[in-house]
Length: 327
Ligand code: NAI
Image 1 (cartoon, protein in one colour):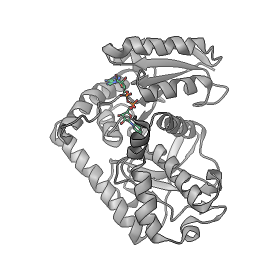
Image 2 (cartoon, rainbow, N blue to C red):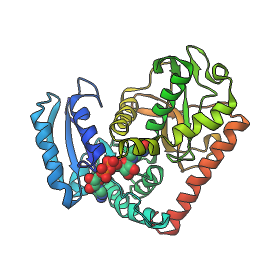
Image 3 (cartoon, rainbow, N blue to C red):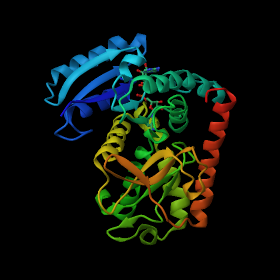
C-alpha cells in the first residue's frame, strides 16, 4: 500500500512537537500504514521544523517513509490525504476578536485554497488552531471542489477531558463510559452532555444524580480546563491536544468502536436545530472512513439551552468572518 501523505501545519509549535512523533510511530493510522510527513511552517520557523525532522529521522520509525519541510502551502498540501491544521494566530494582549478572525483568515484562506488546488481526492482535514470551528469554516469556504464535510474541527480534547472528569466523579475507569457528547463550539460555551452517556451500561446522568454538580462543577471544569492547564503548567495544553488530534483522525479513518460514539465538530446538516453549514460539535459514529451524526437523541431543556448558546456563538463568528469578507 502506498504511504499516506499527512500534512501538519504549525509543525515547529508545541502541539506539533507532541504530535509528529506519534504520527510517525503509527498511532494515527495504525501499525500497517506508512506515512509521508509534510511539515508546513512560516519562514521564520522552518529551521526549527527542520530540527524536529532531524529528530524524527533519528527515531528510525519503520513506518515513516519520508519528511518534507516547507513554507509553501501549495507544496505542503499537494497530494495530502490527511491535513492537520494546527498553526494559527493566537490572541495577543489588546487584540479584538475582529483582529483575531482577520489574522486567522490570512492563514486559513490560502490553506483552504492550497487544499483545493492539490490535495488528494480523499483528503480529510482537521483544524486544531483556534478559533478552530470558524477557522475550519474559512478553509472550507475556499476549497469549493473538496466535499464540504471533509473539513472538521477538534472538540476531541474537550470530549476526553469530560470523560476523565466524569470517570473521576463516578470512581470508574474512562473505558467504562460510553456515548458522551460535546456539542457546539470549541470555546467556553461548549456543552459536555452526559444525559445519553452510559457508565457500565447504566445512564450516567442517573448515576451522577446531581444536576448542581453538572451545572456548577462538571461543565465549567471541562470548559475551563485549558485555562487551568495554562495556570498550572505555564504553557497551554500540548500533549493532550496532540493526543486528541490523533484520536480524532484515528477514529475518522478506522472507525468508532461498536456501541459508542465520539465528538467531532463537523458541518451541520441541520440536525438538532443547528443551522446548516455551521461547523459545530455533534455526537458522531465513524465507519469506512466516513462519519455520521448520531440521530434521534432526545434533547432535554437543560441541554437545549446550552446547545443553543454555543451554536449562537458559532453563528456570530460566522457572521463576523462574513462581514470581514473572509468567506
Ligand atoms: P504554538 O504557538 O506553539 O505553535 C504554533 C505554530 O504555528 C508556530 O510554530 C507558528 O510558527 C506556526 N504557524 C503560524 N502561522 C502559520 C502558518 N500560516 N502556516 C504554518 N504554520 C504556522 O501553538 P500550539 O500550542 O502548538 O497551538 C497551536 C494552536 O492550537 C493554537 O491556535 C491553539 O489555540 C490551538 N489549540 C487548540 C485546541 C483544541 O482543542 N481545538 C487545544 C489546544 C490548542
